[in-house]
Structure formats: structure tokens, C-alpha cells
Amino acid sequence: MSFLSKERIIAPPGYSRWLIPPAALCVHLCIGQAYAFSVFNLPMTKLLGITKSAPGDWALTELGWIFSIAIFVLGASAAVFGRWVEDGGPRRAMFTAALCWAGGFVISAIGVYIHNIWVVYFGYGFIGGLGLGIGYISPVSTLIKWFPDRPGMATGMAIMGFGGGAFIASPLSVWLMGKFTTPTHIGVPETFLVLGAIYFCFMMVGAAIVRIPAPGWKPAGYVAPAQTKKLVTDKHVYVYDALKTPQFWLIWWVLCLNVTAGIGVLGQASAMSQEMFPGRITAVAAAGFVGLMSLFNMGGRFFWASISDYIGRKNTYFVFFALGTVLYALVPTAGALGSVELFVVCFLIIISMYGGGFATVPAYLKDMFGTRYVGAIHGMLITAWSMAGIFGPVLVNYIRAYNVAHGVAKAQAYNTTMYVMAVLLVIGFICNYFVTAVHERHHMKRGEEAEALT
Image 1 (cartoon, one colour):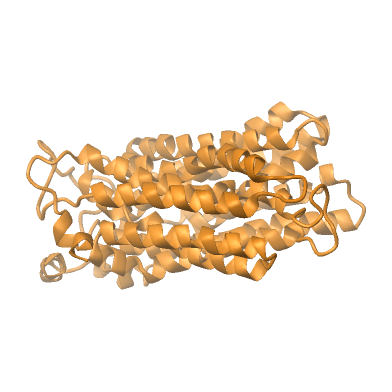
Image 2 (tube, rainbow, N blue to C red):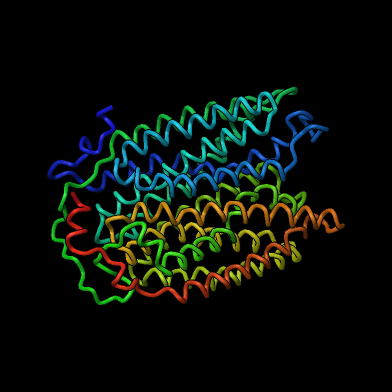
């Protein structure tokens, strides 16, 4: 399989670096479908009853674990395979991700067809989660190396695709389910099969066109900036040495808390909006809301990551946590007032910063630990996303279930969760405050750097 080797994708002289972001987008737009999975939740609670849930149908709490498992495996696989991706190059990683992601849909289609939730957990959650993790980190290190002058913008361009994937997948999934649904059958398995085929083809396009820069390549006219910023280094830290620093773990908690506060809401956005505003937000409107959130998730990744090139990564996260705390605290007020507009505005801004946190963190790591192992270090850090993928949906789903079981109306069942999310963001603000420059004892020596580059 020499087509997949790293040596085959070294860019020739004169190769345009602006061809790399489209290659990354081919992958990230596909795996970004994970953020639209909530459009399947309510239909999958009626697979047997068709028009309403019947005995034996799956509950929302059971279905919520599909998304949580996928996000957990995303982080775990990114950590485990980070060095493998770094050493083998982006093409091999993108190809592997395509196989796993498409395979996850096929297995899940079988699980839905035979009505076995454990097969769906294995298919979309585990196999698909492997595709998510490997695919997510596959272009990050490559983009930073192609764009040393604008690392935030570069990672934002690619990672915005992950946020924007739901903008395409949400209406497409609803449309496909409508086409395959009959009076006696809900067309979820057929939809999974079609999505798997589409995503495999597009991800293979990305794998075909991706390239890595030749050793020593720099953009024309590029001059490395003077080291005047305390939190930006031109040194390198070995991937496993990075784990020994307090900075890594502080940033780990920064990402984990930021993601926890957003991911649970995003995973249940469709059902939450319908329950908080019954009769005013229909299933179709909720799908549109999920798509709109995806658009802001996508735009926020590019906008905030680009802004971070100017105001710094630490200051960018300060904005996320301070503004996010206020907005989460406003959501129950929006529900009490019956203001759909305020509800929508709050969550669109929240989701833009949620996405911006993902796009900004690779550049944050580059500033702290250098470029040599940033892809592998990023893979390790994504375990924070894994944990958040469990914490967030569990907080939303189970606090809601507890409140409803104790007589709280569904429209107010999410209020406690919103205040809990606000508290988590305050803790994240404190963690970000304590991030300082990595001590020089962790930096690789000149001989180690030269050996690592060969």
C-alpha cells in the first residue's frame, strides 16, 4: 500500500499550501455528522411503535450513550494513535478513518434493523468513534506545519469542518429518513447506509489530495517571530514529557470543562428545544435549529481561532468562560419568558465559543510545546473531549429524567443543568488563569530535536 506511505505525499517545490485545507475539510465535514446525531434520537425511540414509543422501544437515556461512547472513543483513539498518525502521515490516517467511519454506519444499520442497541453502540460508538478520533487529528499537525505564520487560522479552517458537518448532515438525515420511512417502518437503517457510502467517498478524496511539506520548507518571505511573548516558544517538548507538565493538565481541564458545558446541550439540542417550547418548535424546526447551531459551531471555529492569533490563546479562553457563564445562566430566564429568540441567541453564541475552543487548542499547544509533536500531544489532550462526552450528555439526560420523575414540567427540566454548566465554566476560567510558560527543563535539547526530525 505504497499509496498510503508518508514518502509518497511529500509536496514538490511550488506546491500551494492552500490545497491542504480542502483536503482536511473533506474529512472533517464528514465526521462532523456526529453533532447531528440528535436528529435520530426521537425517531429511534419509535422504531417499534412507529407513531409513538411502544414497549421494547429504546429510551432517550439509552440512545444518549451512542453519542457519548463515540466521543469517548474519539478521545481515546486520538490519544492511542497520535504517534501512529504523526509517524505515518495524514494520508494513511485519513484512509483508516474513512474505513472506520463508514463501517460504523454499516454496523449501526444492522443494529437498528435487528433492534439491538448493543450493536449500535459497537458500530457507531466504537468503530465509528475510532474513525472520529483518527480522522479528527489526521490533518492538525500537517496544517500547523504548512501555516507557521497563522496556526490558529489554519487549524480553524479545518476544524470548522467538524463543526459544520451537522449543518449538512442534519437536514440530509431528516430528508433521507423521510424518503425511506413507510407507515410500518422508520427509515433509520437505510439512512445510515447511504450516509456511510457518501462519507467514505468524500473522505477518500481528502486522503488523495493531502500533502506534507518537504523538510525545512517555509512560506515565501516567512520570518519566525522574535520570542517576545511569554506563552509562545520556539522550542519543542517530547510528547510524553508534555504529560509531565502542569500546563498540559491545566489545558486538559480547560478543554474538558468548556466541552462538557456545550456537548451535552449539543447532543440533545433537537429534543431540548422541542420540550422547552412545546408546540412552538416542531421536529422540522428543531432540525433547523441543530443545523443553525452547526453553522455557528463551524463559523466560531474559524472566527475565534483566527482572533486568537491576535489576542493570544489564553485571552481567547478567558472570553469563552466569562461570556459563557453569563449566557448559560440566561437560558432558564429565556424559558420562563417563553422567548425562543433569547434561547436561540444564547445557544448560538455558546456554540460558537464551544467550537472556537476546539479550533484554538491546537495552536495553544503549539505555543506551549512547539510544533514537532503537537499532533501527538493534541491527540493526548483529546481525552478531555472523551470525558466531556460522557459528563455532558449524562448531566443533561439524567438531571432532566430526575426532574421529570419528580414532577417538574419538561419545559423547566433543563434549568438545573444550565446552572451546573455555568459553574463548570467558572472553574474552567480559574484553570486557564494558572496556565504559564513551560519550564525550560522540559524542552528537547538540540541533538534530540535533530534526531526527532530524521
